[in-house]
Amino acid sequence: MAFVEFKDVCKTYHMGSVEVRAVDRMNFTIERGELVVIVGPSGAGKTTVLNMLGGMDSATSGTIMLDGREVSGLSERELTLYRRHDIGFVFQFYNLVQNLTALENVELASQICLDPLPADEVLRQVGLGHRMDNFPAQLSGGEQQRVAIARALAKNPKLLLCDEPTGALDYKTGKQILKLLQDTCRETGHTVAIVTHNSAFTQIADRVIEVREGKASRIVLNEAPQDAMLVEW
Image: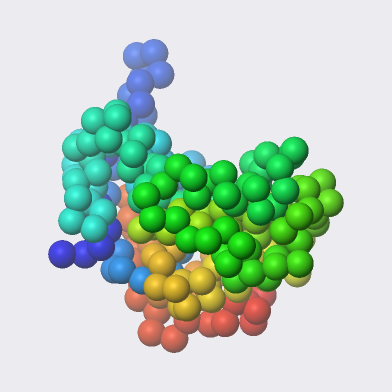
């Protein structure tokens, strides 16, 4: 069995009398330890996929599996624990607590999960060993995103979900964050999924899932992923 499996997943929204199918019988798998890029234009359904994978939204029909567990069948309480223990989230905006230091921001996340990693060690891994006592306002955008990644990794999640993680960063810093995510996947064995509209990011992925009109229109396995620092866009 694959580590992540979407099987005939549909997500339907009702806007008055109009039915909108954001995800339409989608099928794909992800193997443990892969760096996956889920790519598609705005409105294609990729963020809905991320929300369902992360337990923030539920499927209308179909089956979602993570590590042998049926996520699509969980109760609201079970979904809360699933988000807390199994999923790490990295968003376009960093969502750091402004009156806490970098170290305290990471410790905050590690306090709510079952098997956390030491906050100081994770900050060193993302290159911020010298910035632990700084507040978010004292950090650059790239450094704040590194804290957000460290916060997600400190939970020791089964799956790290990244929604446009370079969207608020300049080109050079964005490359550094992509490289960090790539290295994290390679060195720690975490399974990482990046959701983006930027097709250039597909060059660094082990698996590319192209999403169009609510379907996985194309899935590509990349035998020789490019180093993130060499990617141009």
